[in-house]
Image (cartoon, rainbow, N blue to C red; front, side):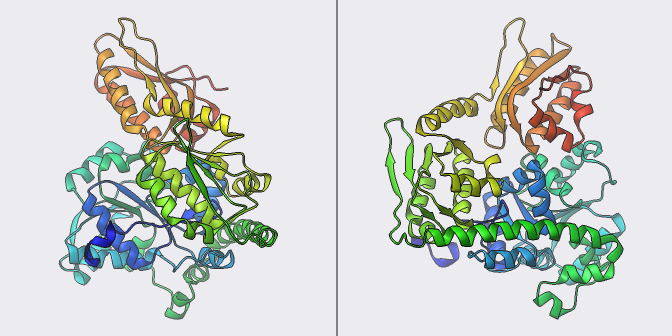
Length: 500
């Protein structure tokens, strides 16, 4: 369909990402990123962009919640030369470095040209004011919708309601947030949808560069992507051990992924004709059988099939019995299908994984994201169970003596709005008769940071109506996510906390 539009009106779509160390990086340049931002603003729907460097990737390897935030982002950009070099050595190169110091100035120039409204959140007040003065001199027609420099505080102690209110009233098209990584990404993941800002990006110390507080590296260092080496030379005491720790952890995982890539690739080199077979089953889901080698070439050759599966979404099962090699593009396709089908409330299950395929996914920490079943019958059962969870993430009981409200399954962006609507309806119905409203989390297997944000909003919503919302019985994985935000005392302070 896009071929019928003139070139200036064609809608760009992110292709299959390249998965490096469990993070699906989008294959885009800076100019393409600006084009995607324009489309996001035109859509008027909220989007979160993430610029991930080596430190961020290392954190994602250690922290399942940070990993989930990266997976849920609408665009993940490569902000580190080691990542770019790793993609080249692993056979699926990213086109270029999309560093914050280069992207943000280009984005602000595009904002001036297109009349996009920009809001700055975070950073020291003095630094932000200097940055705005510089921007007014460089971009006199740039519309700054507002700026806010909240006091430094943990996420739980920030005036989130006031911050969100100020941003909504300013009605920006682009939100640039400088709270430090990964705090800024966690904050955005919790509030992005409620803000309604079309494009939100965590820019970290780029605000200091805009203010002139830190200089850029010499041009020859920039060309080789060695900007962070320049910072290390300027602040060795503060940065040395952090950089060295991250680099060691990163290097080890790169060696493992490189070794696996080359060894398994040689084993399947004899497979020349590789065909993906897709069929509709009697159970109503699409079944796709993958060949022994599932790599970038196979993904490119069957791009028409992946487009069909995304354009006309249905429950999907990948039979991976014969897979003996899967590269970063193959894993990237799995992530792409997972995100697109989840947005359509469709289930995506990997079934009958060969030992090599399972090992590859585990090393990339993909087993925490993708649903895996031992055989096709188990996949069918998972689809039936998960479909019920998506459409009934909350059990609503409006009888005269209501039972505790029960949340179920995974609480993610896919079911967040339905969960919010039903939970608030339940709260409204009980406010006149009950002093305490109980929400039972015993059946919740995972909760994203956006779900944690909903818990906080429901807590405040209840107190405005004289009702205390009590969350009880969280599973250990759910409790681990909540502890990441240091919200355990706030959310469970007055309730009976029982965790397995």
